[in-house]
Amino acid sequence: DTEVTQTPKHLVMGMTNKKSLKCEQHMGHRAMYWYKQKAKKPPELMFVYSYEKLSINESVPSRFSPECPNSSLLNLHLHALQPEDSALYLCASSQTPAQGPQETQYFGPGTRLLVL
Amino acid sequence: RKEVEQDPGPFNVPEGATVAFNCTYSNSASQSFFWYRQDCRKEPKLLMSVYSSGNEDGRFTAQLNRASQYISLLIRDSKLSDSATYLCVVRTGGGNKLTFGTGTQLKVEL
Image (cartoon, rainbow over all chains, first blue to last red; front, side):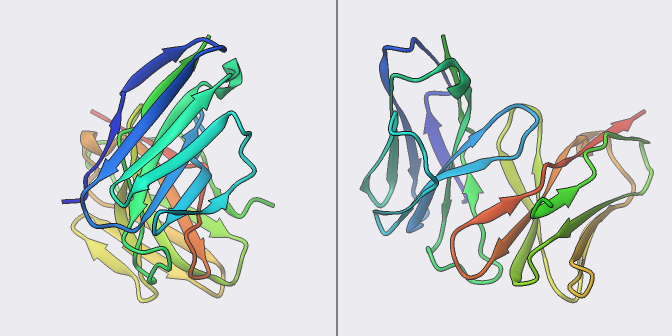
């Protein structure tokens, strides 16, 4: 079962709001990822957690704050976002951080975020 | 030059047609290659890995040409349900980062 779940499915927030996106996987994967995807563009990597530690931050603005409470959960805390942050936010996981040649990432359904 | 390049399409083909997508990558150190499929407003889903010797999964055939840094996906006997965007994905090195092409849109019509 290659299932990654994300909540909420949709989120509308104002620029002064604080909200959180949640991601969960029960596949025993030890690497988890946040991506941002704008319409008609490929996913862009934001953060990587390996064994619950932040290993990659792709120069993401501090208004996005990731958190990995345990090996199954990944959160993305949002604060003071801008309208241009509106996008599909995808969570993914993979078995290990140092991936074998054919190992890849499995995506959740995403949270569609609209910032007003 | 983009790291992974694809023709954005759209490719409009009739049901039953054979269609091929191409992808080129710029980093010769790239080691792993994949095709993902993304339906409108959905997440990317792994379609197939691409092996050096080429591989087939039902109606789908993937090829890799390391010398030319070129990957292809062939879809035979297209179905309406094959309509989607096909993302060429490359991993360079043994790390976590995947590089996505911009995707090729396929529309299969009656």
